[in-house]
Length: 266
Ligand SMILES: Nc1ncnc2c1ncn2[C@@H]1O[C@H](COP(=O)(O)OP(=O)(O)O)[C@@H](O)[C@H]1O
Ligand SMILES: [Mg+2]
Image (cartoon, rainbow, N blue to C red):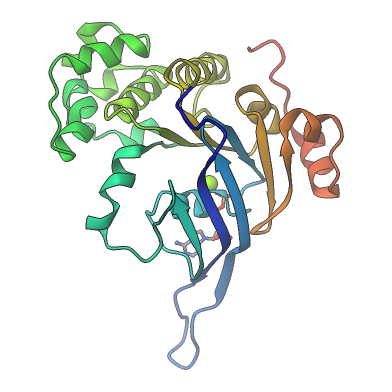
């Protein structure tokens, strides 16, 4: 556990994000899509925070804002006490260092022309940090042999590719790991392994985790807190075991009825 465990690390206030669909005529503006509506949340240091909701509910939009990969239409985000909205890229170096992301599909997040060694080292190169023996160390941490370094992404299975993506995310020793549906593109049979790996690493390294899934049983397996999203808003938030056992919002109940259970896989 890092020091100051339990104090606020990410504080989002009243985040709204409106997208404009492309215009279909010269006379009219493109239609507005309210992807997020005044969303507020606090992620504490060392917390494993899950965001759950069906497809289109605004989860990825929220994550992109929290990672400063996109800007809100209105609202603010403080990371480690510093405002990150409306800041130029050069003022966000601390964030790029502290926060790393694992995406849904490792096939599209890993450049197929690069060897694993260079893929894993890339975040270090980008931050101007020494590589040393870090690649081998990281491959070991995610359960891959050192020989994987000389191979290309297509030479691995989906689960192994997600291990490579996790190794790459951990390279700059981030404080926060953000994962957007990290097992949804994988074979059902390997989902449990990757979730367990993520949970173990977060625990061992004392990381803060922000984890998105459409499946509450997956969130329950790796997170302690959950925020339930519906139509761009957070409709319910609390300890995941409480939300699982006694959902308050009707939408959460619907979501619970829809989740395929992970029993037998974990
Ligand atoms: N770049 C974009 N331009 C227009 N609409 C978008 C864009 N990205 C997302 N949306 C819309 O915003 C809503 C939320 O999308 P998203 O955040 O991807 O949801 P989720 O990750 O929960 O599936 C959806 O209606 C989606 O169609
Ligand atoms: Mg998404």
